[in-house]
Length: 377
Image (cartoon, rainbow, N blue to C red; front, side, top):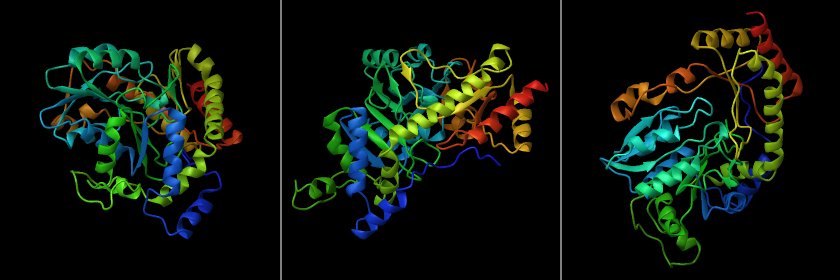
């Protein structure tokens, strides 16, 4: 069976984990956490990057720092993972879903302004597949309406928009280092902070509401509880695992992009014949090969394709069930305007196996079986 995903591993992970254990520092904010944070800061140009236990927790921190509360509204796409909404629902806010663009599966920037009310506090664009939303338009809307922008860049590490790293354009950016992402620490994430004035408060929230970070820097002689917070600091063991991959991040990125390009070229004739649709990368966007998907004609064709690929030893998956159609989405949120594309496009999209070091033979098999499916139709 060709797996849909195999978590990245480059070879030094266990060595670095053993180093962390040997120096008796495994609880977090040790040398490996600092290396990872510094790498993110230097690579992206953000003011501060804080490793977190997940992208979900990074988004929760962003919601707290944005002072989102009961009665507030946040504008976001329905086509995303539940964490994007949960972080704000936990603060008592209402997700207001707007439709997506069918080309990128990102929030339709032209529909955002009409969804703004006097309760709107933030816009939360999701960079699907590591391909940027139209951030110039979104930032202009946010500026004119005095709104906060929290970028869900879970899939966007190493992607850019007009030369700017995803996660650094809005007020806050959220990365994921889950096992399904390009770079992994098992479970983990990072919060990127644009405004340096927010860093100290973010450190307090991340360290259970204490000024522990200042204590370890020698800025205070003892640490104490100073504000509300939680435990968002990952283990040093997770950071050690991640550091092995960040050391060779360019190699991983190039490998994934090469796989992405091979899929794209192989399936161009199918698209030209009107049988499928392929991903679109708008001008000014540089993606990271996070995923490769095709769009079948409809839900029924996708279902047949998934079964055919499975019968031939190829694991393919789909996602997401649009949040506004889910029980919690109906309870906590609302859809503004018409759902023209969100549901329809979500029912057509199918993700193919793509991971670091996917072999040429295995990728050839995926390509061959998908072409067979459409050749037999």
